[in-house]
Image 1 (cartoon, rainbow, N blue to C red):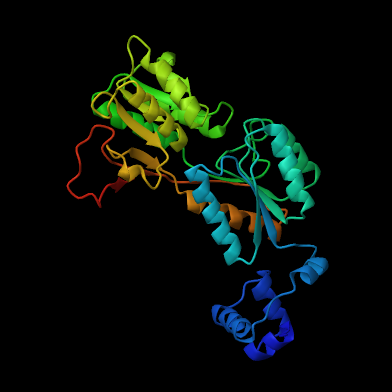
Image 2 (cartoon, rainbow, N blue to C red):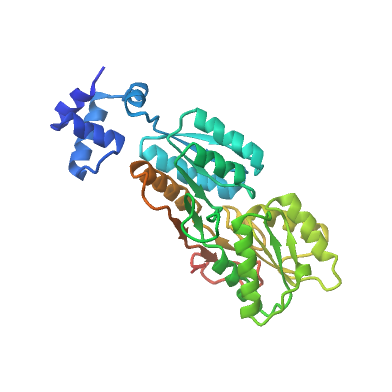
Length: 349
């Protein structure tokens, strides 16, 4: 069986250089790195992960705790996390906290007991137990999608965070619908307590104000970030004496629920009611009509979370930071706009 010393001799480098390449502990010149990787491939060298973890106190594993893994948005985030961890020689342990604060703490404890080097977490609406556990055990962590502010409401975040922009893209959906002549634009909002819900409601209200439209609390309903909740909430909207002429759904699961409600009430999109959604997904282009949406860079969010965690592991005392990635407006036909002549050219900032 080939050893690290064999790899070093074959590549013409030191054993320390081989270690830096395999462990990512120090930058190595590209041609040197490639020589090491070629030698590893040629010799069939397999690192002894158990022995390495005993020496370094690292398992080269990352814990990922996200709810609703069946949600296409989080599935794409998972793909981004998985690809980035594999590329950097890490393994991935996955758990679903189910957006329940108590279960969330148990899941994090389980991952911690598995001796993961750090964690990537999409926090629940009430992350108090999660924060206490992470801080008590000094666990390196990155929050994704959902942000958690500092306790005093000012200063740097408690942990590194990465998410998509939410406020401005939602404002853009409102102004787009207002520009088409809609004056009663409803919002099916997400689970209360989540930063994404708060920011999208803020964006909605800013869009109304920018369009000179009044805010009517009756047409802002809570869909609780899932299909069944959105179906119930949309049905409530449709029972109003003066129902909305356009709707915005705040995530893709709620889009499905809203479409079900509209169908059960015999309403067509966009003829009877226009629809825009926050979150694009693979089959949104296959709906009839095709769904106008805000597309989040979900895979990039997952990959960026991994890099931020590795940065934290390499430099534990670095300042915490929050990164926001831009979204893309995907202009289709559910908003009531005509089909574009060139369907390949339908994405705009």
